[in-house]
Length: 150
Image 1 (tube, rainbow, N blue to C red):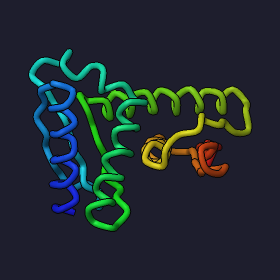
Image 2: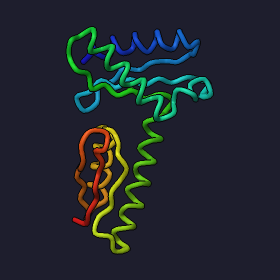
Image 3: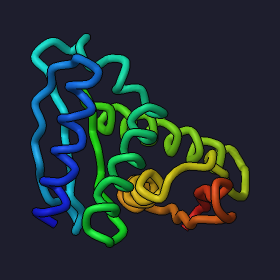
Image 4: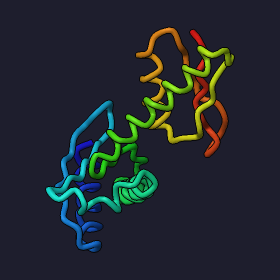
């Protein structure tokens, strides 16, 4: 995992250089995954890259770069400018609204399709809320989370 993090950090550093952006890269290991965090003293410096769609695309490119060097699939997580914390807060809000629909009488609440990492976060949020269950449903890009009363 250390080698994976180093390869990914080199890739991101080169990407930032090409974009002429400054950023500090921290490498960590969390839940069996390499976790790269890119931060900058000037938050505006990374604003364009910290949009969720951009972070996900750059994460996939970084995973491919790691896989190309190691020959193994990478599950690394990339955070740019606190984008993952912001997304986690959005997911918590989605879960809260879904639970409100169930409390109001809906038998279940479907959340939009999302990545496996985001679904994992949703499952954790639901488990912590007590009294509700979640499971993934669908295939491929349509895979989403369904919440029910537990």
